[in-house]
Image (cartoon, rainbow, N blue to C red):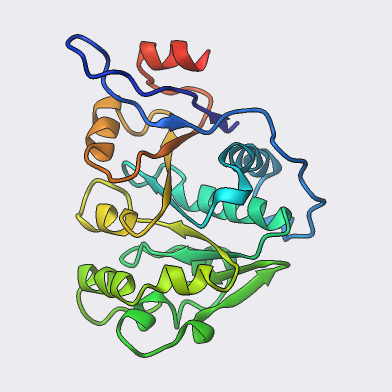
Length: 243
């Protein structure tokens, strides 16, 4: 069952624990509106965990939310979909964006067209209006699309074209499925396009040392979404989280 890790930043004085990302666990801030979304996309327990995350983040403050992980296989795409569905439940126009251009999964997961998408925007073949596909009330998806050139260049172009701002200026919230932070440079590059980040940590997948390596130097300190009931979390973080 999805749980949320609460932890606070530690001071950098000698002997103090290393910094840990912020938490997204708290009591609901606002009631959730009745959902009119495609419930078959996710198990209810995962969607409920994502609702709790959205409530803590505060729906009024979200513009672009990137969902990342340290390594592959931690449930990043599942959680990105869950967060997008939860935001749509609040009556917010939400766009789920596939930015893992090398290993896209959303098109297959949602049984939608795989292109045109973000790669096609980056390389000048498509406009934003061409790539938006509605998948339910108040929620659309933009797939990865096709990239004929370099993926780092495509990500750079998405930033230069300010695609995320173009989406948010239409009163939409962006939830982006990002590449993992470790394994290639594009994970950090894509994370740099987002105003806020959520780091998905799955029990037994990423050792704590690799998690710290992944988040080191990020411009935005990510909140942590713990995907699983058991995880190798440091004792000091577990004490702060009360788990």
